Image 1 (cartoon, rainbow, N blue to C red):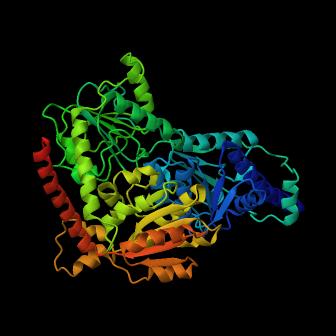
Image 2 (image 1 turned 30 degrees about the vertical axis):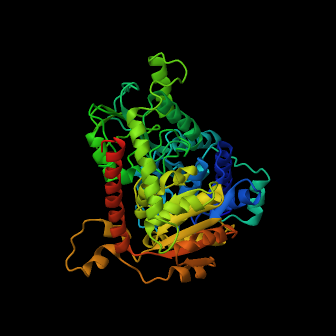
Length: 606
């Protein structure tokens, strides 16, 4: 009995020892945030995290909902550019990570999932809380690694170092999610005396293992041409910049490269609000989505297109690209998966900065002297966008009734430029495309469009605010309610987040779609799905201060009030989805009429 007791005591201490070594190795790699969810099987990991957080070596957030926890971590990843870790127990807890893992995969964000599991002896025999969790996240991860199947107490220094090296590279080389599944043998609980022994330098005598970690490392998916795609800057063309999915540290170089190519080619630039492009970019065409497909003139000759990153959320952009017949080049920031649903472009995945350097070498291009400082096409498009700006300012004034287009127009103008904005999927990101104008590019705009879902909206914004400071989330009521557990983070560290809730009584975007629903009473039940939850009462229950904004005149002072608060704040506006759907159509048709008149008087062929 004494020998058995000593052996189990050694396993308990070794579990804690290995957990500390694992986390300390990740800290050395650059990890500095951990989101921890409660559980029994993950006890050694939790104790290790608590110790390191107590010593100030990492930032710790605790969460009761694994789904929200993973989205909070994803927001932290997007804001910092470095993978945080999410730690969970075994069983269905792991399944709750999948929605955030899917988004991390598609939006190319580094994310490390560390899940505790039962050892092999308890697998496939009906043991409690034991499932095939090693398979749950596999389709959406860059790398899966399994610890020694009998338990993490069999790790060695060399094996653990290899484990961490592979995991960190998997998260950041081609940014995305990595899953570490760690079988942990019992006993799980470590006494205070045993914890002290580990912290005072105790090392297991038999710190060895012949076990090999099981891994599935997925390379970049092919089907993309390796030939260097060439564009001719002396010919007509335009640039489309989609949502930024490169590494955070590469964004400034990317901005400079876009500036250089525009200077070389003179091509106009259509930039998504999520592109990371600066409002100082030359040749920038504002409100371009509102001008498509008929209000931007196209030359008679073939026109080239430089497409940077994935497509924006615009059907009208797809129509424009289908009309361009001069060759299209699509350049991604390291993502070799096929990003061209239109099947029109040659794709090159090594990044735009690298492409431009290669172009200059191949063309013996000296310096940054412009070939076409401003093409005739760019001049025409800039004239049209200036007229559009003036027309929108007249028809969407900062006064009177609140509408969703007016919010998209004025929030980026009112909000200080040092405060980033996060746009929820669905209506907000689309309205920013159409109505916000150049002001939306005066700061970073974030949006999680990898899978284009409303999952985890509030938690994502909380994660961004944890690392970037005051953040401003624009969301609809269904998206906010879908992730209402995100409010649970509001009590931790006074996360500085302003939430602007556009309450339109359900899924307002469905009013913009050509849906034929009979009887009409079924529309809400089947699509809009309005809920009876009072969002202000929900905020109050979580201790979040709030204000109801009744008119556009009150928007600026309400935003100013929200920025004076130290923690999360809710600002609620109520809009009519049917009226706003009609307003969007009315603005499009009215602007098109205005621009046709403008073209007659200014020799612009639309």
